[in-house]
Amino acid sequence: MQAKSLTMQASEMRKTYVKFFEERGHKMIASASLIPDNDPSVLFTTAGMHPLVPYLLGELHPMGKRLVSVQKCIRTDDIDEVGDGFHHTFFEMLGNWSLGDYFKDESIKMSYDFLTEVIGIPSEKLAVTIFEGYKQIPRDDEAYDCWKRLGFRDDQIYSFGMKENWWGPAGETGPCGPDTEIFYDTGTGFCGRGCSPACSCGKFVEIWNNVFMQYNKLSDGSFIMLGQKNVDTGMSLERILAIYNRMGSNYEIDILSPIIEKLENLTDTACSIENQRQFRIITDHMRAITFILGDYKRINPSNNGQGYILRRLIRRVIRLLKMMGLTENILPQIAEAVISINALVYPELSENQCFIHDQLDKEYALFNKTLDNGLKVAGKIISMLKSGEHLDGGEAFWLFDTYGFPLEFTEELAKESGISVDAESFKDHLLKHQELSRSNAQGLFKGGLADHSVNTARLHTATHLLNGALHRVFGEGIKQMGSNINAERLRFDFAFDRKMTVEELDMVSETVNNAIAAQITVTCVEMPAEDAVASGAIGVYERKNGEIVKVYTIEGYSKEICGGPHAKNTGELKAFKILKEESSSAGVRRIKAVIG
Image (tube, rainbow, N blue to C red):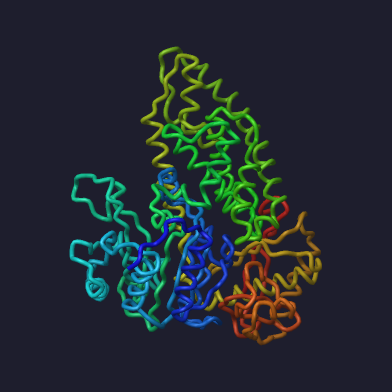
C-alpha cells in the first residue's frame, strides 16, 4: 500500500467517497433539506436515512437498490460534548445504502477497502465493535466472521449490547437491527481502566457505523426477520477528514479552520488553550445556525419546534461572545465565513444570504432586550440577599432558562454584592432539565419508520391536496415550508404573511373535499428531476439534475415530487377538515387538519 499525501480537503473527500461507491454500482442522491418532510419522529434531518424511510420499508427507489449521498445533518443530543475535538451540532454524513441488495459481508468489505486501500488508514489503527446478543437475538457472528476474514485480531474486535451496537426501531415497533462500528485508535487518552471503544477518554474515535436492518420488532416485544434486509451506513465527513490528515481535531480541517480564523480577526483574540472550547462552540453553532437559516425551508427563530432549537443556538453564541467582552453584533460576519466556505456545494446558502443576515440582526436585537430585562430582574433578586449569603441554584437556573444567563454570568453579578451562587444546586437543576429535554426528544419517535400506516399514507396525500388548494386560492406565490404527519393528523406550514379569513379557509376545505369526492386516481411516474420541474411539478428544492425522482399527480389538483407513501385514490380520504390555522413563525402560517 502506497503512502497517501496528507493534504486532502473536504471537496476531494466527498468526491473520493462518492466515486468509490459509484464504481460499485451505487447511484448518487442529493442531500435533502435539514427540515424533514412528513416525519414526526425528528425536528431535523439527523442522518442520511431519513429521506429514505419509505424505501427502507420496501418501496422501490427510482435510483435503484444501491445509493450513496453526502447529507447535511443537525443533531443536538450531543450538544454538551460540542467544544471537544470531534462532536458537532451540524455535520455532513457520508452514507451508502443497500435496499434489499447486498448485506453484511459486502458492506463491511467495502467500508474496510475504502478506509485502508483508498485513503490509506493502516488496519492496525482500526478497532471494530459488534453486537453481543440480547435475549432471543444471538450474537452477530456473521459480522465477527467478516472482520476476521479481513485479518482483524480478536483484540481489535469488541462485543457490546443494545446500547452500543443496536439501532432502532425508531418507535415502539418497526425495522431494527445490529450494527458494527469502526473506530480509529488515536493512541492517546488512555484512561487506565481497560480502555475500549465504549470509553470516552479519547483513545478511540468512532468514524463509521454500518447498520444492518434485519429484524422487525413487534408490539409484544418479540423480533422477527424482515422480508427486505437493508444496510444503512454513516460516516462523518469532518471526522474522517481530520483523521486522514492526522489532525488533532476536526476544527483544523479546511471547512472549519477559516471560521476560527474569522472569529479571531473579529474578536481580536487568538484561539488558545484557555478559550479553545468557546471558540469551537461558537464555530460549530454558527455553522449550524447558518445552514438552518440558509435551508430552502427558511426556518425562523421562534419558541417552538425547529425555531426554538435555532433560537437557543443563536443565544448561546451571543452569550459566549458577550462573556468574551464583545458588545457588537458580529454574527452576520461569522455567517459570511460559513457561506463562502460552503456555497459552492450548498448554493442555497448564498441564495438565502439576505434572509440569514436579517434574522441574525433581528435575533441579536431581541436577545439584547431580553438581557436588559433579565439584568433588572437579577438585580432585584440579588438585592434581597445580604452580603455573604447564597443565591439559590434554582433561581440561578431560572435566570439561565428564562433570560439566557450562564452560571458564570450570574456569579459575576452576585459577586459584586458579596453574594455567592449555589453552583452545585444549579448543576442539579440543569441536569434535570437536560434529562427532560432528552426524554421529550425521544418522545418524538412515535412515527418515523414505525408508523407508515394506511392512514398516514392517506394524510400524506391530503397534504398534497391541501398544497394544491392553497395554490388555487392564493396563486403560485404559495410556498410549502414544511409538513409533519402522524397517524392522527397532518400539519402543513406555508409562506404567507397574514391570518387566513374564514371565507378563505372554507374555500381551501371545499377544494380539497371536491377532490376527495371526485375519487381521482393518484398516479406516480418516474422521471429525471429536470423533466419533473419542466412538467410543472413542485417540491424540487434539493434535487440535482440527472437524479430520477417520483412525481405524484392528482389530476386537476396536485403535481409534486415526493417519496410517498400515498393513497391509491382520493376517495380513500373520505373527508377533510381544518382544525386550526395559526402562525408558525414570522411570515409562515400553519394549518392542522384531519381526514375521515
